[in-house]
Image (cartoon, rainbow, N blue to C red; front, side, top):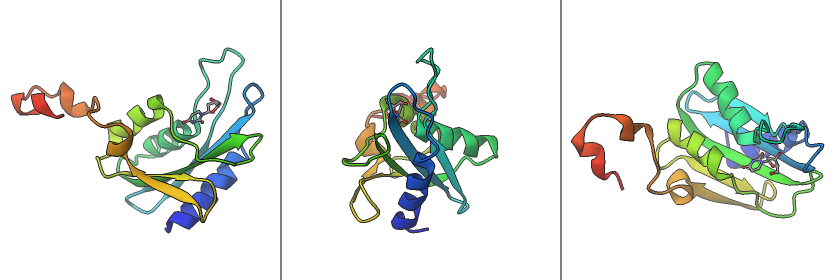
Length: 144
Ligand code: THU
């Protein structure tokens, strides 16, 4: 699966966003190591805090299906689904990525299939709190 193809899936996913409050539509496409793609959109809620981001929708669908190893994710978004700029994943979604992904997991932040940035999870959330911090092993005390 090329970056272009993954971005195209993210654009399709964005069209499914439920965004009556912010009108910011976001789409994500997550590629598993086994080669499957899980798409996600943001789903808002009148109580606001139950809103879930596109990236987490994609991750949670994949994890529910038994997938726990991931290669890359493409993310696109914009007001009313019009993408004019790069849409960078929020901190909560970065933390969810951190649960399942290694430092070199690629996050493709796209304006279009031809115009995109590729960041690593480590770029986006260096020195992060990860599952390793909960392991009772003194060697893990200095992960940063
Ligand atoms: N949103 C995402 O889907 N992903 C992010 O990484 C950041 C924000 C959504 C949540 C909300 O529906 C809208 O964008 C505006 O914050």
